[in-house]
Image 1 (spheres, rainbow, N blue to C red):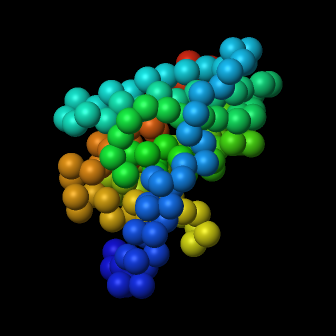
Image 2: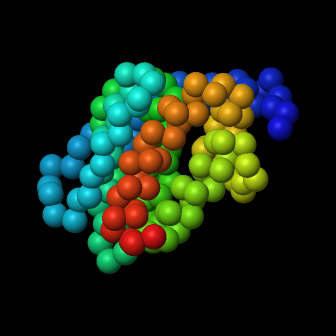
Image 3: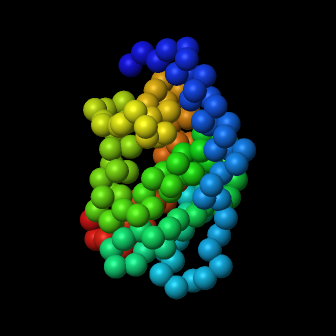
Length: 148
């Protein structure tokens, strides 16, 4: 997939914005209906803790905390923002599609979905782990809660 210079600049700006001002960073104070997973990278210092508030098969809200590079923090922020409001199966399918995109397989993504910034991440193989870290934590929660 060819990315224009204009798109590259747009993608950089999205990464800088989410890394500098993540929307979903922080931990829930309440414990009711909160499901958590921690993902530590085996190849770098990234360590992401994800939380989802799930009620009646629906993700009501989500948060993440920890430390990571711009790629892992941005991916966590965008993924959690995008799955809030979805049913568990919808979120699971969204994550499967995201995973396929990141590893270079066929995928579907709309032009207005910020997650598209990672569509060429497979070119930098060391970054694939970074952008999939939070996704793996979310997947663990969804599998546990939704029995997929």
